[in-house]
Length: 502
Ligand code: MN
Image (cartoon, rainbow, N blue to C red):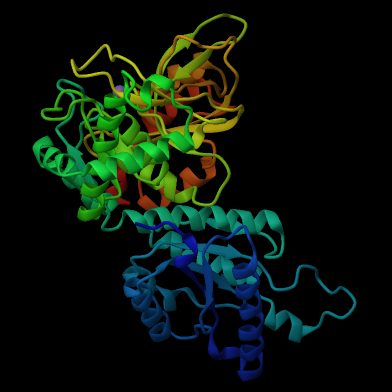
């Protein structure tokens, strides 16, 4: 499981041709190496940027793409045309490239040297038209990709590259990724269903079900010593009430939660999984619905979906990879209940238990309370609030003939008053442009009640990610109206029906 993005690399690839002579190509190589080194050093780009020799022939381009496909840590290519690189030279390479690429449309020099510019300078610095030729062949091949335009030393440009790199890292993580499902989907629920074969073909991750008994066997093999170690960790990290300590009345419930956490962690590690689902309808042999365990596994980078929701589990995992090393957390989420007061309509997001403490503010409180659903013993869970700031909700749906990624930015706001009787972690937010249009649009788009919620990942990450994944991207934002989104959805239906023939 990827934990450090610096283990990964993106290759910096420069296109040219032989027409310019050795001297010019030497200079092209020197300049592009300088750009690659600068991008490698800049903090906005979290992976290694590896300089590759300038490409001047179809064979060299094809060979490099083949190498990228099998390189262990190469998540994609940043392509740049310093000079003119005829587009047909790229056809074989780009057709065979299985890694994503982005097009950096930059120029080595920022400014035109008005006083000294001559034809030698013009021959060397041809990005303005070289990038257009390369752009044509990408569009002619119908390859979706990010195009970043501007000078490579500009922090905004570096940040846009960094966003794409994070999306590419999440995509890389999905390839061969494994999602474990403990139990099936919640009975009769529609939106959490979907075609797992289609998902594996489109996204690269596999989803496999396990009888909860397989998990219970591992949970039951956890030793008392391991349980006590974990309980000690809980007492250090969280506010633990007195009656959950020592021989207190809730201490057995806490030990049981620790046993479940350790067992789940062992199961996921042994199987090489990076995401998982549970369901409260299938807990045979588990004394509690896993709450604390799920929360802590999510905090360690696992994707999660409740009620068998494997699409959201994989999405949360992807968002967690994108967010590695960034401020702000990422969690499984559900639009739970509304505040419809005309002075400021907002959403209270939560779940039965499973909200990731990476988004929490301050020291979480570890509590044991009854659960009004599932008919099991009282589960342990972390309870916390979330500090104000910008966030997003994202959802992936299976529409039968395609997947749609739906994204809605929001502002996390304080609750109007403390919530002393609410025994779960919660977030309060105002979606853009407002709750009326956001929820209306979300519903027209068929968005799920489950989401990946993040205060680190932005709509730009998600747009880049959907482009790499080759799926529909629908954004509900400041300019959205119900009328505009209805049209967009209708047009998209038509587009995706016809797109196979384009
Ligand atoms: Mn749910």
